[in-house]
Image 1 (cartoon, rainbow, N blue to C red):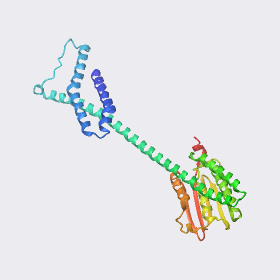
Image 2: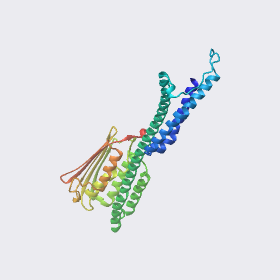
Image 3: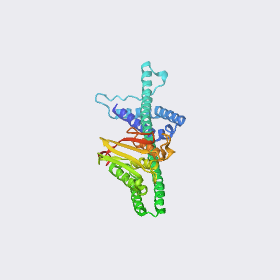
Length: 333
């Protein structure tokens, strides 16, 4: 009996690996079901007609060579009688013997096919997740790259106006613009940066705007309770401030822009208010390229952890943004 069981299980594991490494990948996974069914049928026939008699014969020979005590020298004959020669009990035993082999084949083939299909499903799921992740990253990179030309175009136009007026501030404006662009190039590949560095970027931008707007603009800039341990998606805040200057400040026309940033726990709150000096924002829904860009990037980076509101009240445009930031200790690795 031990030899018989060992031989059956060895054969079962051979079937397992044959199906796992060859039949399932070649026929079942590619959905070539007819070829797979024919392969299984051939295996069953070989198992019943060839392998099963061979296993019984080897087990019988081992039993003869290692006869237990008290066998008294009797040598049984290994006979496979015809069905007509069998007694009713023998027919049942004969049927059960082949049923056992068929069950063994199905058990090992089913087990190996199930594992292979499960691995394929997990692999496909990982590929889909990886594809979606790479797609979202590509979209984020594209959205970031949209900011740079937009900002650069506006800044160069303003510097050109300073140069045309032969202003002494032209060189200083170029230096500040160079510092901002260096920041953009340095942080464009980073997933998140410290919130303090993003705020410094906004401060540089405000100073750059003041150079060509001179005394016609008043900026109420308030920053309080900012945590150094929190990170933020780069270039999220600057487009909001840029939007306020774009539609709320004109050279030679006095205006006031209010910008307030503060934190409560993990949440960053940004409140902006500017007068509407250009009627391009006559409708509340018209947010401009920069704000649409920011809204999409917030959806990708903080899908359930942000709130962005914009509305026009009278001749003033308001933007309120709240973001739940992540701490440095969670993302430093």
